[in-house]
Every structure is written in C-alpha cells, then in structure tokens.
Image (cartoon, rainbow, N blue to C red; front, side, top):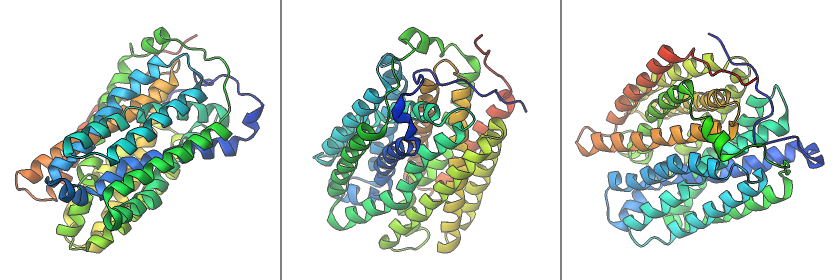
Length: 404
C-alpha cells in the first residue's frame, strides 16, 4: 500500500518565532488541553447512573447528552476551523478553550435533562477545532519528520485523562455529585488557558483563507476516509458509552470499581497513542487498516468475556489500545489528504470520531432499550467497525493530488 509523502509545514502554522525553542513546553501545554477535553468528554460515561438518578431519567436517555456533545463536535469542528482561517492559531486556541470552559460550568448548573443536553452540545462545539488547530501547531513546532510524535504527544493528554482525569471525576461525582465533577472540569479549562497563554508560541500571519480551507473539501479521498472513520469509530463508543452499567450489571463489579475500570481503559488508550505515533511515522495507511482489524477483534473478545470481571477488564484494555491507535492513524491520514489545510483535516477527524460517538451511543442505547442487554452494543460496534474497514480496503489507496 502506498503512503503519502511528508507534507510541508501545515497551513496556518508558518515559521515559528523565537519562543519555539521551548518545544517541550508548547507540546506540554497542548497536552494539558487534550487532558482537559478528554476528562470532560469521557467523564459523562462514568457518571451515567448518577446523572440519571439525579434527573430522574434512564441510562439511554442520559446517553442523549453524550450524543449531543458528539453532535456539537461534528458541527463545530469544520465550521469554526474554516471561519477562523485568518485568526492567529494561538489566539484561536485561547478562544476555543475559553468557550469550552464556560460551557462546562453551564452544564453543571443544568436543572433538567433538556438543559444538560443543550449544555453538552455547546461544550462540544470547540472540541474538534481545538484538536485540529493544536495538532497543526504541534506538528509545526516539532518540525518535519516528527508529525506522528507531535500529534501523539498532544493526544497523550487525552489518554492520560482516561487514566487520571476520568476516574477522579467519576469518584468525585459518586461522592460529591456529578455537578461538582463538571465544576472541576471548568477549573481544568482555566488551567489550560494559562498554559496556552504562557507556552504556546505565536505563528505569525496565517497563510490561509476561508476560500482555501473550503477548497480542501473538494476532495473525494478525504471524504471517503472521513466516512470510514465516522462509521468505524462507532464500534468503540457503542461499548464505552455504557461501560459503567455494563461492568456493574453484567460483569458483577461494584460501583466503586468503575473508576478503576476507567483508569485501566485510560492506560490502554495511552499505550495505543504511543504505539500509534510510532506506527504512523512508518506507514499511515497500513496502521489505519491494522487498527480497524484489531478493534474488531477486541470487540468480539469483550462480547465473549463480559460476564467475567477480569477478562472483561482485559477486553476493555485491548479495545482502548486498538481504537486509539486507529484514531491517531486516521487523524494523520486526514491531514495527509488535506495538505493545504491541515488544521481542517485534523478537525475533520474529530468530527468523524464524534459521529461515531453519537451513532455508537444511539445504536448501543437502542439495543439496550429493546431488551437485548448490555453486551449487545459490542456486537453492534463490531458491525460498525467492519463497515469502516471495508470502506478503507475498497478505497484506501486513493490519494489527493499534491499542490505544485
């Protein structure tokens, strides 16, 4: 299988200034942003029972808040990235994280499920644009030949959130209430703002425009890869959305074990991110295909062993490793297919991820509500993953024409 050549410095991130000598500090600040968003995005899954009890609704209904967040990402990622094409990348990161922080605090004050759903939608709007712009800035700071490393470092913040942030916020939510957990996420947003302001360098005038960004969308291979990811990523989220009730009602674990299960899942995501960074720098397309195959196998394993606590946790760990490797590879693939607007390409990956998040939560909730039980979402996820794999195998070799 062929692989695209290494692109030049990403659009929207021109030659860095003198502060770029602090490469490690800049990547760390971006990783803190990934940690904040990862904690906020996935904490809702761990707090599903508490939110449902407090608001008087069922688990599938609370799942609508997760779906709303995902829809916000899908809508906001391309729109905000394109609309802010001429804005300084650092200023844009600050604006996006500021909006994100406010939306999370508003979610904490939601009086009912309808208001919570609206708050989660607003919180999702800046998510994809933040990761898209941050990935492009990180790649520019790290320099040619280390794209996979730079993107994986930023994404490591998201995965560490699943080791530390999500379990801690889940424990806080169980003991002090889910609203306190969302306030904690607002505090994390404020810390991220400080880190970006202090360490992320300016990148001078942005060599882009709304027309140039939109021109990238006239790209068949880009949309095929986007659709494959949007469908295939649903496999992970069909299971992870309902992980708290699954491990308590199917695997027989106590509610106090849920934060530890989420921490193990986070360790798996961290391993998958670091592994994916290495594999992507060798061959992007092979890593995408391998990621789909491995994720499908992990879903089958989890479905078969979910009734036993230790094997179930092992299955979740492997699902985290394989799906995160796939996610990192798909983001790099979409950046390759949008050489003139890499921020937009990376943002589109998060749109695809969250279409998968929304569809996985929806279809997983559908089979649970129909009475098929909490293992059924794993088989739904397998079907979604195999469809994504089939699309990559059928169309994956298509490449976008390189600009002169």
